[in-house]
Image 1: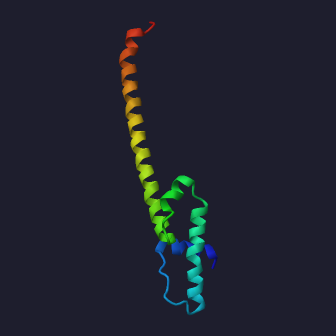
Image 2: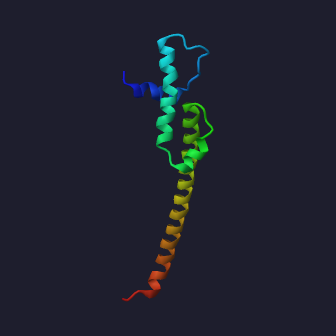
Image 3: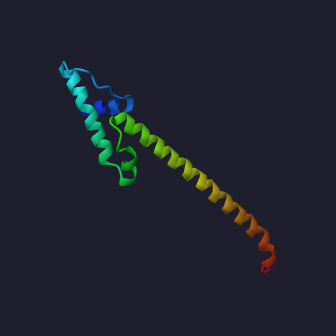
Length: 104
């Protein structure tokens, strides 16, 4: 299987470092966490990097970023709703003013 699938599993499901790296599978799984962290951190802007700098495993970074971006989406939706309400109030106001200035 492709390496990215294993890295994604580590990010999504988490990783616990084994006490001893005995066999080859443990060593491979141990190498996936830093690879996942590298992929995540490499694509972050500085503003988001500061929020996850203290995290030690990729799952922790992933969860913190998800919560940050979910909060951003909530703020965007709230602003959009406010703009829609302003637009609708202007539209209603325009409709009430329009008959006064008709050029018929």
